Length: 350
Ligand code: NAP
Image 1 (cartoon, rainbow, N blue to C red):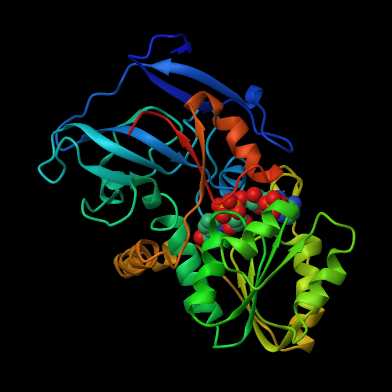
Image 2: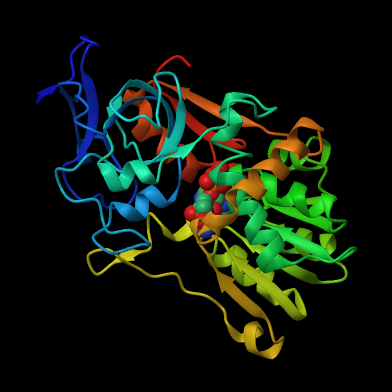
């Protein structure tokens, strides 16, 4: 392996050099070029088109198991991608087929047999643009769909509060809540994101947590309290939202992004302090989940989400960063609020 040059007929890879402290830095990784792998018997060579950026990647770089084992030092950084088959020794996959799976932060991948079984085939006839299969009609949409509908279970007219609402999962969760007849309030950073929540995504109200009066904004936006909290952030925001929950409310614990960079202590164990007093005094139900828990029902979700997108009931925004070499900055964008909707890195021209 050599450090990356301009020669593109190679497999560029980000390999973990050392465990990051705080935000990830380029120096935490080796960016190297390796030979393009060749598929063995029964194997398939994928060329990655898009790398989906997910805040959980930061947790996978700690030395603690967060749903999946830590990325080992020296390994290619784990990541979900959308890829096209460029060579195949497997009858089930033909050159040109598209799949979504754990292809990693690299140009090419030959998933070993068990990994290949987990590559999801992208249907050729979905009535949505290709990139939507990473966002609204892919893992992001599945997370919003199952988290909100199976765990949050909003009823007509109830108030649903979504944090990180202008991001990938939040923007879809809020729009699904609107489709289901809820009154939807989003929390996001900055006036422009709050405007978008109201004017483009159809939220009923928005709270700008970057303003000092955000707690007053939250109270004004939720005069009847909150029935369902779709929680993406944690920390002070979650604690303030819990204080406004109605008796018997549901908390969908989707993520705790505010702790991922700074919450790692004791060599990687994540600490996310929370105010759990309202959980017992208001008889709240709080359920964490990972969208893959619902894998047997991905087909149902894809069909429904694609229909809502094609009917214009869900607006699908994304932010595209060009070039695998910019993946480190791209992941940090999610912690700086640099993205609107789904953040993807375009690795090769689709
Ligand atoms: P995203 O929302 O597109 O990007 C993250 C957004 O979070 C940023 O744009 C930023 O928006 C906001 N943010 C970042 N740090 C913050 C902080 N300290 N305080 C308040 N807001 C902050 O990312 P995503 O992929 O949709 O993920 C959102 C959450 O869902 C994450 O917690 C993630 O781990 C979780 N998730 C869970 C699953 C699952 O299966 N359970 C799957 C995917 C994602 P602002 O400009 O508004 O600050």
